[in-house]
Image 1 (cartoon, helix red, strand yellow):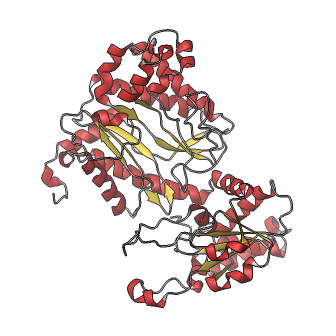
Image 2 (cartoon, rainbow, N blue to C red):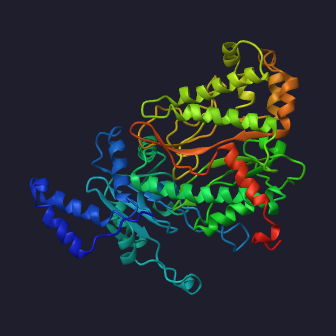
Image 3 (spheres, helix red, strand yellow):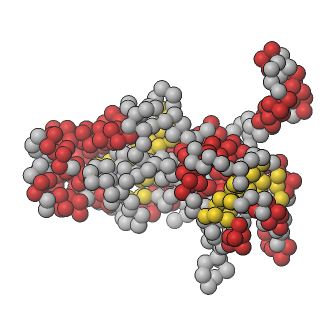
Length: 500
């Protein structure tokens, strides 16, 4: 969380006196009130500014918004079918962006004309108080959230009848009773929401920075605990345990914890195979902080010693990442940055003998997708694969088909840079069956690398004014990674806190 404190009355008084100096002499009374209000809410999630961001983008699509309002509902607690066990609660992300609230069953209303933001809380279920305690009061909610008013759900009708068009994302069990007042799935509304979420403000970046820091520590913990990690499940457990210890109760996505040839499966989530007799580990896992996601991948040798093939693949992926990181800045084409990673792979495969032939012809054949089939990265925010990327999964170019970000980079975007090289028997077999690609593959050389499975290195990146900032702090230097693993292996099992 931001460490910015709310100003007390004496500090506000000082600020008001200073605001009458030359720097603020022309500021209107309304502007001054707005400044005071902004100072009051600096430590709150900036929901009101987010609503204004949506309005700004909506105005580019709908010129006359005088008869429009925004109404978005959060998720509610649900139970599994035929059971009284509750499903894990995950707040609806568009609702959270506009409210900053994790209260189940809530709604947010934005009066576009008055620029008034109203949070509606569910009515108190007094039968549930004994079990769950009293819910947050409207007064406490108003103090906590950056909204103009907090009311109970019984007041919603009074607001939805003000305007002819109340834009919402979708009709759900939470808002079904108000469906006659709502317009769902409006493409202009989704455009405005996604464009607003595309650029992260400083508050959001602080949340992402916190998620990244927790993730760094959890990855370090995994690398450090090989004496008690003999199954992929143990890797999964170690990461989640240390995330929760740091206050992150939820993972941004299901961790990918694989070893040996399993590392060739991009989104391997079985996480239950033995690590015995294998050389490599790939863990793709990210903690979540206040609904904001980290997404980091690291690889390491189980023994603490890199084999020749494993280290070569790792260093090639690391070069793919370092070359693409240099290119990240406002105005750069993510398509071109992604294709640069393919070109680095091709050069290195030719150098090592995995490919043969002319590098330009190899590039045009897209045979490199047999070893690097996914996109270089995606937007990151309230969702791991965040909105606004404009992917084209029907792109005729296989190298670009699974690229989730197809836009020119802008300051404030947060994205992943995650090149990888994989030795998937399935993908390699497909390429060998295609004469246009098979002629470039040296199968006997490729076979020597299959035991590695795959390597991916993934960091979380903020696009800054003149370049980028890497939020990920866990080292990717292969020698430093090996030292972390070796230091852990030098410890006896009794050093680690585990019951079984």
